[in-house]
Image (cartoon, rainbow, N blue to C red; front, side, top):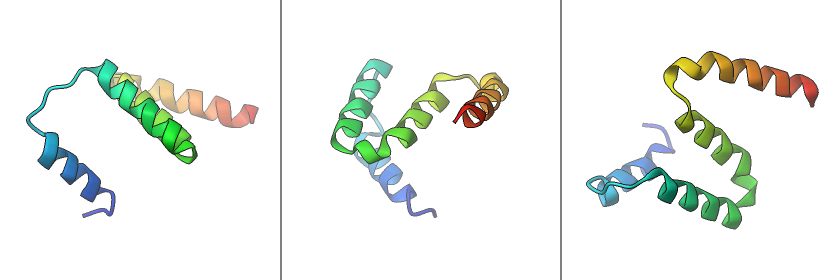
Length: 71
């Protein structure tokens, strides 16, 4: 088990039976970043991962490479 799995397991245990919409999730992620700005990049990457279909993975890699070159 990864260290990060503890939080995921807690989420599943406490709220696993609930249904949420993506607007609620985005709002909660924004609130988290507001309270923890040091995690902005990680939350943004997770949001992008969740927003894209599996077929969009290649586009993501190309965009990240382009952004890295521009930096």
